[in-house]
Length: 119
Image (cartoon, rainbow, N blue to C red; front, side, top):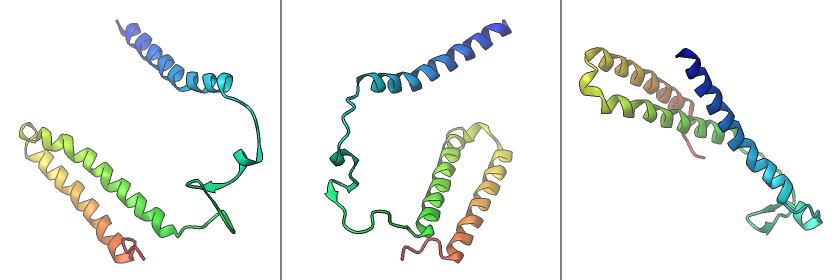
């Protein structure tokens, strides 16, 4: 009975690899390979760039994006907890309050450091 579980996981892994590799193989076989200067030219939204193409962004924008991801993942953890709250009991409530306090501490720290100022 246990061997069937491993067979299922192996088949699932093979199908996942197939779905990842198959489009790459098809594109490699079917796509045209004509190279030109126009295709290799750098552009931004279809408009030619003037001057330096590589622009440095402030690190604050990346930190702002990471903060968004952290709080987005928080929502992923909060949703199943909220759906099954009635059957979890008071221990789960205490654990979720601790989780939210840790995230709130991170938000206060980021706010105090000025990460959330968009200037």
